[in-house]
Amino acid sequence: MIVLSGPPGSGKGTQAELLCQRTGFAHFSTGDEFREEISQQSEIGKKVADYVKQGTLVPDSIVLEVAKKFIKKNESNGIIFDGFPRTTVQAEDLDRILKDNHTQVDCAIFIELGLPEIINRLTQRRVCRKCGAIYNLSFKRPNQEGNCDSCQGELYQRVDDQEPTIRRRYEVYEQQTRELIVFYQKQNKLFKVPGEIGKDLVYQRIMRIVAGKNNS
Image (cartoon, one colour):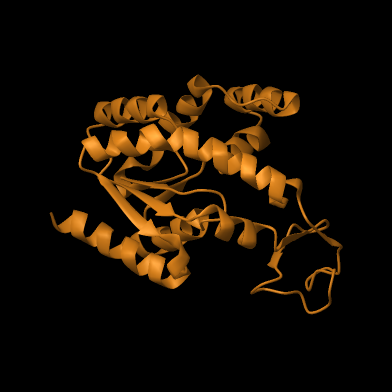
């Protein structure tokens, strides 16, 4: 079981997908699981939808309920927890759930990236209003400025990708993960990878960490 964390723009979602392709592990993302539960109109999904409509955070009790359901279904394959847990309370609860299922977190990998680089990456991001395709003006530009290559929809900058919002999100991340880093450090499970070295080198570093834990 792998915990993968990092600030907004660090590429942890991309790394989680690459790792899952390589290892066959299941990919746990709270956002993805929430959307799945909502689409199925499950009891959990209805609860999540209420909080989403109100614009408030989904309580830990529901997040853990979703995580517990996912773990039960995927524990035999191994799981990469993408951006979860976010707090030490969630980490303690995750340890308890995994222990009940006779398994544990093997390593917690944190991708580190400074605020200037995060701002540079995220403010260059553009999203298609029509199909949701994502572009970046630095390294994945559309063929025609302002329009999606696939559907010709209008490209726009999300509020989440504007500098004031990025700064707030980074502050929240820093506050939440400071204690989380100490939590995994005390368990001798913490590994840090510099995010500025680029996607391919980050992936190579993470794979070496995972291979080392599997051989230990």
